[in-house]
Amino acid sequence: MYTRYMAIAFLTNGLGAYGLRVLAAGGLGKVTAMEYLAMWYLAGTVLAVAAYFRQMGRPFGREVMVGSGMAVCSVAGQMGMALALEGGLPGFVVFPVAVGGGLLMVVMVGVLLFGEKLHPVGYLGIATGVSALVLLALPD
Image (tube, rainbow, N blue to C red; front, side):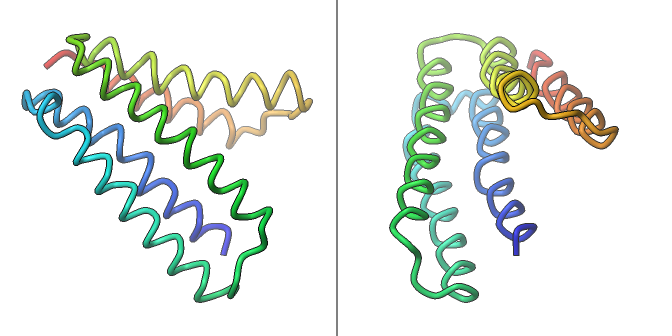
């Protein structure tokens, strides 16, 4: 079940940044960023709720609170990227800072705060993330 939830999170949130990149490259960032984000998050909510209720039934209050907190942070990050693009910052600046900052923060908190040890698969994941950042950062 965990893998299914992570796949849903990746598809509905991870690809959201890519979609913003496509909008920015097409010159559509100013017109449709809000509608785009609303549709992504609506789709993500529907998928997550359907998967959860199918397996688990009614959620506990703590699960709803944690999920809601994560959703607010995710929406804030995506909105920050959309507003930066709307404000005229080029995509090859916005995406590496926004996505790379999140990746760096997660790794730093895990290693420094929680004492996590990086496994070779972890290094592979970081390398994949950096490679994605490089591709997103290429100018139009």
